[in-house]
Image (cartoon, rainbow, N blue to C red; front, side, top):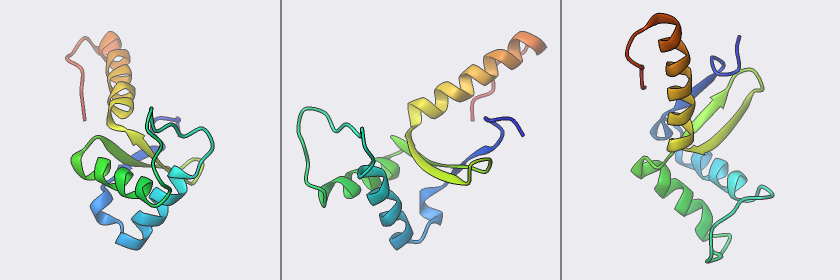
Length: 99
């Protein structure tokens, strides 16, 4: 299974609210997470992440190869899809496929 093929977007609404909250809490407590010029409280950060999931700015991604779940910006997910589509287009001469 290739790296990209092992990743799947999980609709956040399919996760139980306590599980979604724990995922967001784990995400915001990772080292290197940047929140811009204004630092927020630890209590506010998970709610902000869940808000980004609700508005579509971020997605939950499960990686079957590593067994890990991550929250990523939608633009990063689209960039991966477009890169894959460009590679496919160069081989098959068709329009890119965007999920």
